[in-house]
Amino acid sequence: MANKVYPKFKKAALSGVAIDLLTNVIKVVLIDLADYVYNDAHEFLADIPAPARVAISPALISKTISDLADFDSADPTLPAVPASDDVEALAMFIDTGDVGTSRLIYFQDTGITGAPLLPDGNDIKITVNAAGWFRL
Image 1: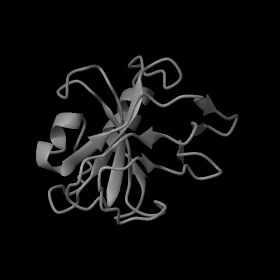
Image 2: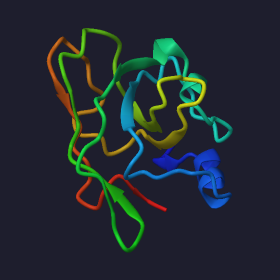
Image 3: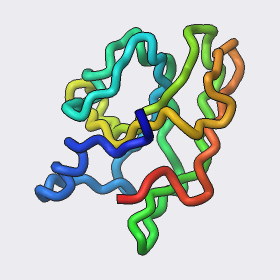
Image 4: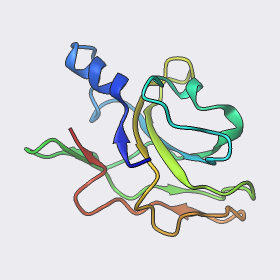
């Protein structure tokens, strides 16, 4: 698998669904790929099984969208991630407070600094690519 914007997110954005990445609460979930297989049909956080969701970041800050449609943010830090399974991927989502309506945006399983990561109770900092998270 390669890094990819979820097709259901692109469809919603192109269909006029109110998706404002700058004003919505955007978070990142760390994923154990032993418990999750990416699928283009996945649309909401509930599509990622709970055992695969190792930890969820605080809301992304300093979000920007460039003239070339690159989405970027400050590097998120997940505080005190408890010891758990390996983290080999991450997914970005719009947090509505309900996994059934929290729309998946982006899946990343390559280019994650230090991956695979083995949480041990310490903070995990995700380094965002200099060009940003993704380009639409």
